[in-house]
Image 1: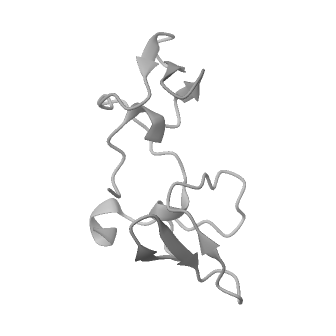
Image 2: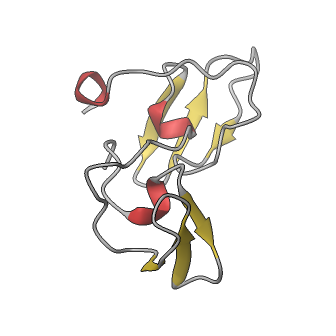
Length: 92
């Protein structure tokens, strides 16, 4: 679950609707849940952050904030100033 495995987990993916999007690299329409390619760039999201701790299948907490708020693992963290990337194999 941690390593990007789908198109929608890639920074090159731009969603069009819930089922498909456009790959910025190839400029082609791709399925959101289709398997990623070898050029996939992981999208910064909470599940890939060193401050994220999983508490359930689809929930976790952020220890970067003193109150440790609940967060979703797939929450995009592109603008989070406290995002600290981890190695996918270290999180698994």
